[in-house]
Length: 169
Image 1 (tube, rainbow, N blue to C red):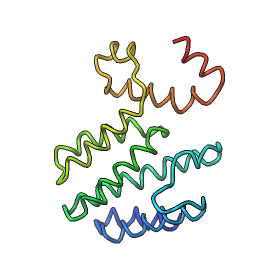
Image 2 (image 1 turned 90 degrees about the horizontal axis):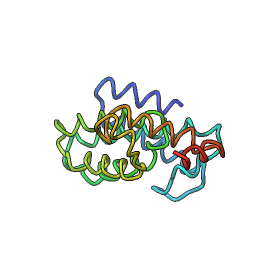
Image 3 (image 1 turned 60 degrees about the vertical axis):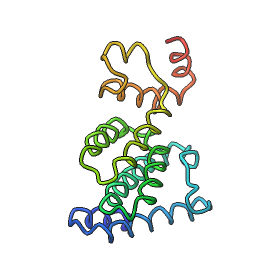
Image 4 (image 1 turned 90 degrees about the vertical axis):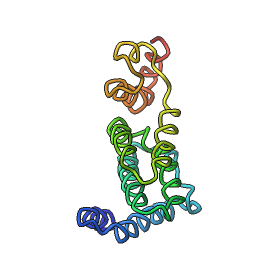
């Protein structure tokens, strides 16, 4: 928790390199807790209900790292990695629609828009499409459709009755 608070504080102060160090330490600590190799932490490690909120925290860390690494093109590889990791975690969180919307806006001013587009493409590819909602809201990427997908994947898919509802739908 201390690493996260310090990282956020440093972000607000625009001390990006120091914030990145704190965030990277947090992610490494999570890898140690789950006894996995560096860079191999995945949403599957958080299947227990008590740990699912950690997915949101990890997603917000990767989102901040993507923006930090965008400050210099020399961090392009790190930014691409953060984009891929964010795309793995954020679809399982309630902040998914918000992060995608922010990423779409950030693409316009990013120094490395390719990394941001990588995230958007990977994150949206992982989400199953919803023909009826996309038609009703005239876009598969509208805020309402993204919210409905997040609800489907974050709530309905976790229960037998929810999966039955999805199947029938």
